[in-house]
Image: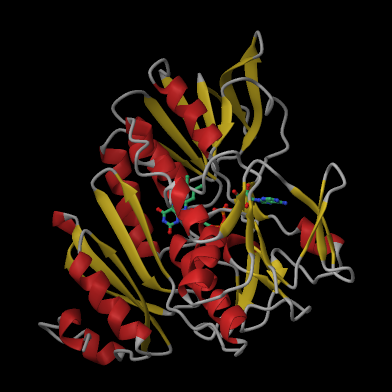
Length: 402
Ligand code: FAD
């Protein structure tokens, strides 16, 4: 039973490796559109910009051959035939499968405003994008970043002190989709203190340029901000078109059930491209994180190998490093109705505990790794802490992790 994995990113590469680790003895083919060996993306907005390339590849080239994984790089799958059980390439070649894993990731969202094609207007999703941004860093005097999410702010931190940095955020707070208002407010203060100019409720209307190169950004209220580099970090769209085209259900992500199967039981979807019912929030979620990509790859590999179907229940966790702001998040704060802060915000070391209906559902830790690890253990074990308990004097999260 040949297993074909489309997408050789974090989730796809993990699935291939986990299939072998689980003892899958049939052919495994891992197909990636990018020319590089499978690599990790988090350093692209962090250490890579300082020149560190060594940390990128997920595994050495020899790993794939040594483990009998046929790695196909630089090739894009253009069609899936579910009846004939094949994937197709642009030149008409076809490849058969009995189990198919879609791990196609996501693409950056374009703004669709004039001037997006100017040189110096960049996005950041892959190694080629990161190389371009890095190559422009030294000559950049003013950078405008569109989007105050994780990637935008990591870039702001990387440019801070080297160039004038302005961040446009469409809403009224930073990282609004991912963190509580308490944490957003702390990051806003810290970035502003390091010289980053934050413009909330600001929308770019047009990128302006000269001789094909960007020179500034005009906002919807008619103001112009000079820029010799613009990075758009306005979120991503799941790459779900292959799935749609072959009749699989998709709605802002390929729809899978709690076991990560699509409506075709031989086809799975995982990582950034997949939307699944979360046992933790009771809602359908699409998560963009390394933990989610890795754990879902592992889960699917186990099911393909054993043939035993099981619900995916891993605890989501995330991190973001913005210079000395080391943020770690355990759980999903969606729908939280109360927060409680422990630690010392003045020192830049604290955690925000988020509660839903009186029970702890997520912990955001800033420079408090021991809180993060304790929260992960506690929440992963399916335990919680009542609000009244957490607000007692001397409360220590670490005491609850066992
Ligand atoms: P991807 O890693 O995007 O891999 C999908 C792959 O599929 C791509 O290589 C794509 O080219 C390929 N593909 C798509 N369509 C086809 C096709 N038709 N045929 C063949 N190949 C195809 N997460 C964290 O948890 N912490 C962080 O600090 C963090 N930082 C990040 C920084 C940056 C700059 C970026 C871009 C992401 C970051 N993330 C971070 C998110 C994390 O990297 C993603 O959630 C993770 O990579 C998702 O893995 P994936 O395999 O689903 O998708």
